[in-house]
Length: 225
Image 1 (spheres, rainbow, N blue to C red):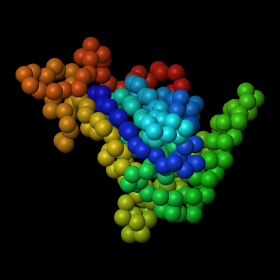
Image 2: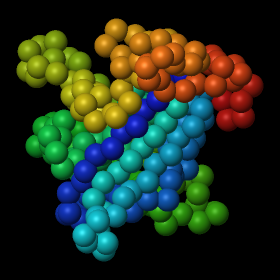
Image 3: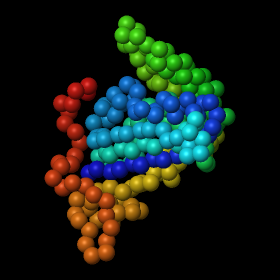
Image 4: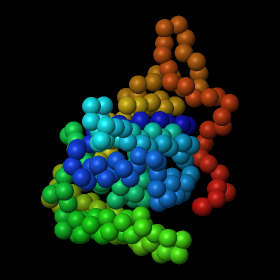
């Protein structure tokens, strides 16, 4: 059944934060768009950066809205693996109570993150002739970063850290998701109290899910799979 994510977070005024805002202001890059397609459970996804109300020359926050099938945990786990570089970037530019900082990355994670930044720069400057090559290099860099982040599982097991960066990041996402757990069917702790396909009665309030739209995972015949 469909679930909604409305993630809004403020960013800092430094160069890295503003560069990330510029990167997402007009939507998703090719890599993120293809990851959304590979997920096969995302109905709709929008992202933009919002200008500061008093300083229009800079951005103040980022807004990400998606509608997807299933529960939050597997959804977040999939994209953490697919788009680890972007999620790490988000964590490092968040202004208010960020999940972790650059000093929390171990040497292999930091090196892999820097390699992703260089690979993305190459993608930004790609031509028709170099597009496939730069994309392959970027995906390889993201895989290297995902592998480095997976080291946290062992470090947690050994008692070196209390939580993995994935756990810290998803907790932060859930705190900043304006529609966290609003979905259908409702789950424990959800703000909705009944199936979103059923209209509210009397003084109830409910979000809306069109009962005429079939629910369930997308068919395996989607292009790009």
